[in-house]
Length: 436
Image (cartoon, rainbow, N blue to C red; front, side, top):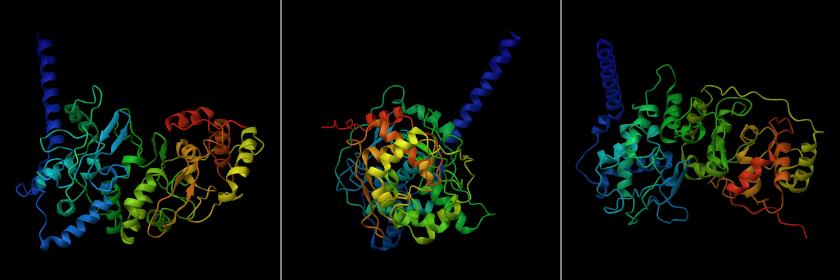
């Protein structure tokens, strides 16, 4: 009896602690600073013009348009884009001030709670495809300006399809558990020991730019692993290591070269492609030079990933020899025989840290699918690469990718043929065209 009483008491204490933690984690009272009367459908006043302009900058820094605009749509923020996750597609909502299908009936407080705490107007938990675990860092001032800007956006009547994930991911209440594990419910805290520039960079990287959403690896539940900004697989792409590691990270880049990459979409060695090209085109190219430099200062200070350079495969390796032939016939015209590419057009392959990651998804995807670099005001022509899926077999793609990753001072593991075959299937690309 005594043992049963003790066990019951421990269980009650554990339940009380769990309830307290859940309450603390779900506490959105920080958003009560926002007004709860004016609706988003009410256009801002002329006196709000400066705040609206600041809010537009906040929206750009947050890259809101990328997820809340369907591909090919001419109505920004009207929703309908299906965000791909390991658990299924999640439809981004219409965040225009339309009263019926958008957020026109939301108050400023509703808006704050959705953005910073992942709560819908009716209190429902949002999925973390909406990066509220990063946006919780956004200041009251920036949130207020962002809300005023959203009130200035053209209302668009567009009913977005309902997200319908399979069991158990369709149980929104379960997000309380996810939040308890992976959501740090507090705003950005400046580090008094660091410079104002460093703190500005940290605020942007950790908050509005939500860099960890792509560049930090995720666990099976979709939460961040303890590998901050050390790179992450994104199905057909790999978001590279952006720590100061000198091998796979950006340790060899100067602060100016980091800022140039974010501004132009390219620098002395790299060209932004895939999701990063979209981020540069939609967001980072429009940031002020001061903000870009602040981001660079912060990124140069985060913990090194610790990735170590292996020994490169020898040039007489059969895979390397095959890869060299494929490269000479198909790649050297743009990327040159020395692998140094063409500035602002064709990426340098020599010394390019993104190519040497353990995960070669981005390289394989680019060879198979082709692609276009970021189009920016400073580099409007950008560069484009054709698809080679029709021309090269899986063996040839694996060989040329291996060659690129182990030439001109590069060093990385060989690319398995199976990885290429899997990527080709994922991209739904046809096999190599038969010879006639």
